[in-house]
Length: 289
Image 1 (tube, one colour):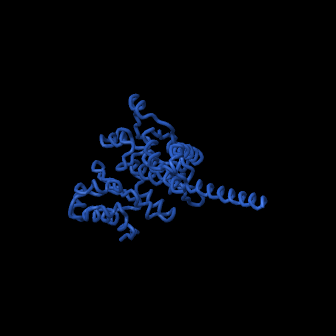
Image 2 (cartoon, rainbow, N blue to C red; image 1 turned 30 degrees about the vertical axis):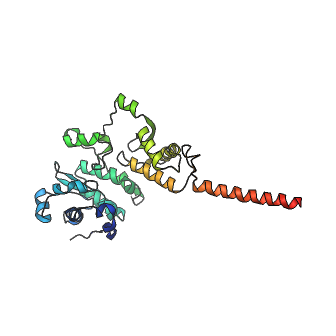
Image 3 (cartoon, one colour; image 1 turned 90 degrees about the vertical axis):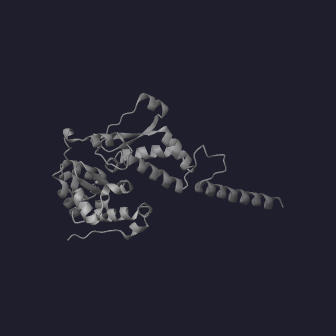
């Protein structure tokens, strides 16, 4: 019998709280059933799920598909954050890799999604990924479902290996929503940030110069190639960065100046200037008496 860690804070997670009772039970079942391996990617039949759970995943899949992948064609389940919550050392990571090493498709999914963790794990000083051969799934094994997932570049319900992404933008789309900056991502690719995204972020994060922060993000990723995000994770990376910058009260962008808005830094600077002005005025007054 295997023992699994299950965070008690899950019950207070807003995502989990919004699930129906059946979806909550299904998520816990997929995390804790004895078929689940260290990678969280395992084969299980729909018949067995229905027998042990009492109903099929299809009935509640739309509720959990941001955290769980149910691939009916290949007959496997992937609990996406299972490894990230369970892994404590390099030995566990090796066990996870070994549990799926005979399936190149699963191995590619696993490594791409957990690369930030795997990059920091070593055995006798050697990075784990330097000891693992990462084969790419043969092109002829792809299914129609894979092709549809490739074109859904921002879908959070399916994580597809980077070599499979098909990023096509028509000339009309490029004119209507032009890219304004490109952020380096994994596999030496770049993610084109569109003007519509920038406009949305300017409205959402009024305390910062969004374009300057995007330039900062680009330079950070250029300087940290091993920590770059996948195409499916880069937008989350950008919004998290902008949110932190906005909360830290960095100088407001030009769109907000003149509207009575001051960041925390500007407020402190204004306060210091006022104090200095008062001291000077007092000094001038004493000298004239």
